Image (cartoon, rainbow, N blue to C red):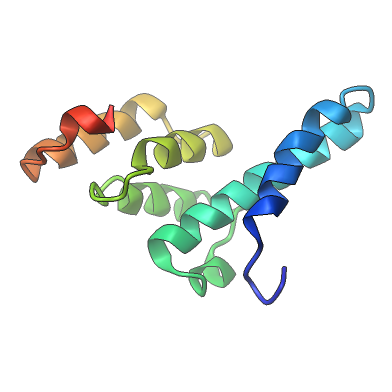
Length: 119
């Protein structure tokens, strides 16, 4: 989309369109999938840069696991809790319990003073 960069209104629009399509289950499922893909692409761009989106393969479970492992180490990012939650929601093989325990462990190991702010 737009040479790898998409405007933020596109994700907002896709999220708003899901309830509109409630009467058509096929369309609703497609819109939910597109919204999840946009969220994943935004997370990849935030943590790894826009170029990494071309290398990431949604169908490869190992890519998702490695992305989650990398994201949980980036304690300084203010949206880390939402990002970890979104990744676990998007990929069924990722455990939210395991992901958040890893996030807490990484925060404690780094003696992060923002632990209270994270959660």
